[in-house]
Image (cartoon, rainbow, N blue to C red):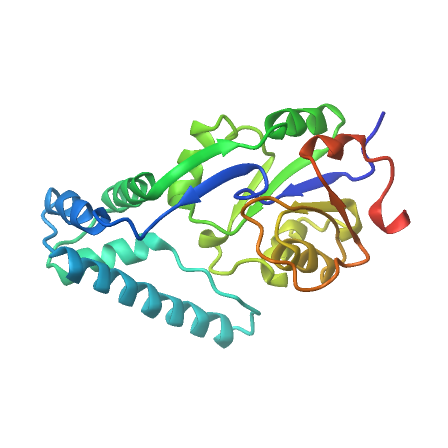
Length: 250
């Protein structure tokens, strides 16, 4: 048995990982203010929330401007590490990279309600490797909390290559982010994208010539259109290794 693609690319959150986060919890910003105070960064809870949201907007605008200046199609992706450093700067304290990562991890853990693998996720990745397929991660996320979460879920070594949008300043469905998969000169027809977002994952893959599989999960956004012709819907991750031919040829 062989797999019809040389490379299988996975989205993470909502595809392999069942996740629920909540940044609207009543005590979040007071707890966050206490945590930052321990680093010498002083904010009142309401001021902290307002400043965080403003800094995110400003960083997003700067990132979008950089993409436009270089003719790179968006959407943009900020790196929250820059936001945490700016919070420190405004409070008169320089935040080190180690501290910024600590803040990012605390914030993510505090806002995470549920984090677990979907059934069959780990087995599917392992089976694809046994079939001689290279397994990639292409995810819209923050490197500073995604890598620790991959480690906690036992997935850090499950991928041959890991591409996280915050490291590139651009996210799916931008062809610039999908293009990172092809940096080694690979043929896009040798890639299969698997995701739970028909726009970001499936249409994003189609625009660069890749086939895709769509899987609807609780985290999937509403589907507004029919799936691309180069996409097939599946109900379970465990269907993937049994794929007998390329989607475009079915």
